[in-house]
Image (cartoon, rainbow, N blue to C red; front, side, top):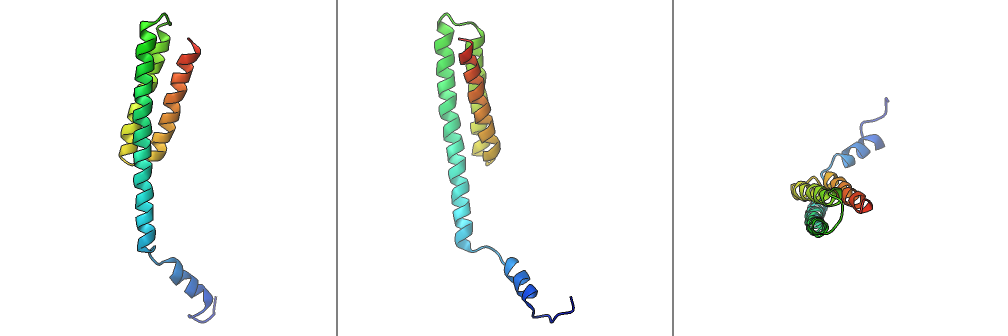
Length: 110
């Protein structure tokens, strides 16, 4: 383009290169902190539930695969809680889903 330097494209380029407002950065940090706490809390809760279910099924007449599935699902949820506390919330979410699916699969064999 052979337009003048002070054309609209120069103004657009200048406005898009600015840093985000400090309030936006604080809101983003608060959302990230909230996501970490949610992933950690949910992982811990599902770990406790899976461990309790594994212990209850272990004392009953269920096949050995059932308490093993609950225990494996609880272990995956515990790992998700650990990963979520370190900031990898998206990966933790998928691991939590996987852990619950493993527990549900164990419930199907009961």
